[in-house]
Length: 605
Image: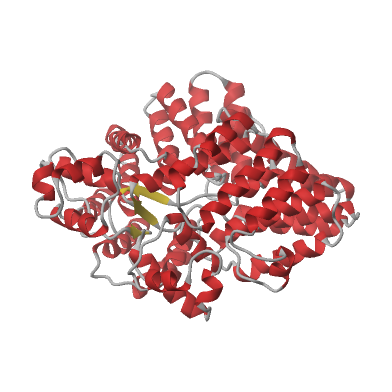
C-alpha cells in the first residue's frame, strides 16, 4: 500500500511508547510489521487502517493513491453496509456471496469483516439476535482470542472494527435481555475509547455509539440523569466532528430523557433538531429509519482516494504521450494498457518512474501537506475546521505551527502554507481579490502545470481543489459569476469522469456543492441549482456528515423563493437554520435570521 505511512506508523508508535506486539497482535505478524515500519513492505488499506486504529489514530486525514482493485474492495464494502442500512436481505446475501472475489487470501482483518457481515444476515433477515450474537462472537476471534470483556477490562489494544463488533454483540445481548453486568462493561469500553482514541476523528466513529447504548442501559435501570449525561457527551462528540450518525438515535434518547425529567424547553428544542434532520433526509430523497446496528458500522468519513490507474491515464493523455513512450524502459506497453484499464495494479517502482517522467514528483499520499509527523496532519484538520465556526485567530496560530513543523522546500507544503498566507492578506484587505487570484494560480502551477486542454485536466488533490474554490469565490465577489461557474462545472466533470465515488472526495465535495448551488441561484440557473443542491444533500448523507447540510438547505431556499414557492422556501430556510445552530456554525446565523424576518415578517421559530 503506502510506504511512507509505515514509517509514520513507526514514529507514532514509538512516540506513544507502544511495543509492536500490542499493535500487531491478531492483525499482522511481527516480522511483517517490522518491514512495514521500515518502508519495505506495502500492505492493503484495511490492514494499514487497523494498525493505525490500534494506536487510536485515523488515516482519514490523508488522501491516498490506491490501485483500482483495492478501490473496488473499498467500494464493495460500502455496498454491503448500505444493504444492512436498508435492511435488504437479498442484496446483502448476494453481495457477501461475491465478496471473496475482492478479498481472497487476505489477512485476518478481512476474514473478520466477512464473518461479521455474515452474522448481520441474521439481523437483517429476521432480527434473530441470538444467531447474530453467536456469529459476531465468532468473528471477533479472528483477531482477538479469549473473552472480549476481559480485553476491555485490561485495556487491550483494539481497532475500530473490533470495537464495532463488540458494540454489536452488546446490543444483541441487550435485546435478548442478557444485561447482567453489561452496563459496567460498556463503561469500561467507553473509558478505553476516551483514553486510547486520542484522535477525535477516529473516536467519533465509536464513542457516541457506545454511550448511546450505555444511556439505554441506564434508562432501563431508571437512572435518567445518568442516561442524559451520557447522551449529552455522545451528542457533543458527534456535533464537534460534524457527524450525522448516530445523531438521530442520540436525539431520540435525549428526548426521552428530557420528557422523563419534565424539561419542556429543552424537549422543544430537541424536537426542532429532530425535524431538521428528518427533513434533510427527505430533501435528499432518502428515508430516515432508526437502525443502530447499521450505525455501528458506518460513521462520518473524510478520506480521499485517487486511483493510480486513472492518474496515469489522465496525465499521459494531457501530455500527449503514447503508451509506448511513457512506459519505455519501465514496463511493456501491454502492461501499461492493462494498468490504465484497471485490470492490473501498477508496480510501485514502475508507477513512480512513470509519474516522474510526466513531471509529477508525488508520493502515494498527502493530507494537504507532506510530513512524517502525524500530529501535523491533526493540526491541519483543526485549522480547516476553524473557518465554518469563525475562529480566525486560532487558524492563524495553527498555520504558524504547521509551517514551523514542515519542510517548506516541498512543493505541496509551500502550496498549502502559501494559500493560507494569501487568505490572511485578503482578510486584512492588504490584497485585492484579483491579486489574490493571481497568486493562487501561481501556487496551483507548483503541482498542476498548465496544459493546452485547461488547468483542471485531472482529479485535483485537496489543496489544488481548495485553491480553485477560493479563486471561484473571489470571482463571484467581483461579479464574475459565469467565470466562477465555469470552474465548478469543470471540477464536477473531472470528478464524474473518475470511478471514485464522490463520497471519497468528502472534504472538497462539501464546499463544491454549497458554492456551486449558491452561484447558480445568483445566475438564475434555478433548475440546475436545485439539481446540484440536492446532489449535495445526498453527498452529506453518503459521507455521514450533517455540518454542511444547513448551508445547502439555505441556498436551496433562495432557489425555491425565486421559483415562487414560498412554503418550500420557508421550510428549507428554517431547517437549514436549525442545522447550523445544532452544529455550532455561527458564521451565517444572523444573515439567515434577517433573511427569514425580511421575507416572512416574523422571527424564525
